[in-house]
Image (cartoon, rainbow, N blue to C red; front, side, top):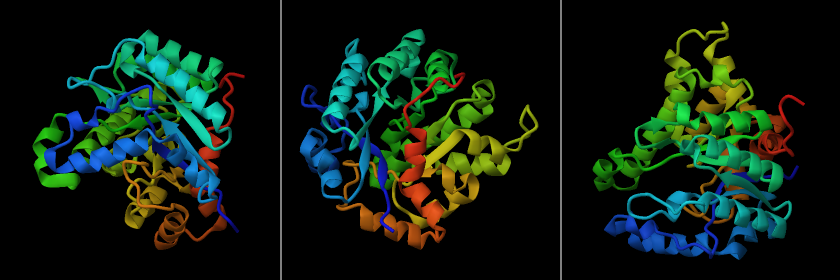
Length: 318
């Protein structure tokens, strides 16, 4: 049976913006990022795999980090402009592109209002936020309006890694050093939501983390204490947390399925930051190598879980 593959983790930068990734890339990564920048702006490349039948759909975000200045800043109103352009992109490629609104979760009530506008007026199916900003992780009170709006509207929150201060120290160790630093930000954000009580406060909140957060998932599963409502940590995680397959490592996929269940794992490639060609064969090989044998589990991970999360949102209270 042919798998319905929905890739949850894809980036794009419309031609209305200029990528600034070369400002932050080390000298030995400049050529790689020049090639990535070309793909980021190429709308035809973004949808080519869906037209070729390699995958069914891409879930797309437009990160402000890719267009920020040297200090990581973007002009006021950038998120609103991004989300308008993303809604146009979705309309041009209906069914092939699913949009996640870019939200500045650390802007207080303004973030919550943009979630409502992006979902209710623009029709975007989820939101994309940074793991942290300055000294604040995603559990900070300033980010609560964004998370509360997403929970109320029943849309998932993709919590994406950032380059923390540790990145500068670890960049000398190449790509693995950079990924480790970014993974710490993503894993710490997951721990913050759990231990900061956000999932207890917002029972309707659904999150998606990249596979770089696996350390936070493993440590929480092993060492987290009793929950206020008496449920165990596995129940809490499976109620609120999804993780993607970034890196396509079967060992990590087995660990994620063991902790979260197959219903909480999503195919996510990090295109075009990571682009190794056609995806279908890689997905099938990954599922096979990880020992995902049940047809229902394979279908769920390949695309079913993403489609379930991204169904036309309705208010959780409806």
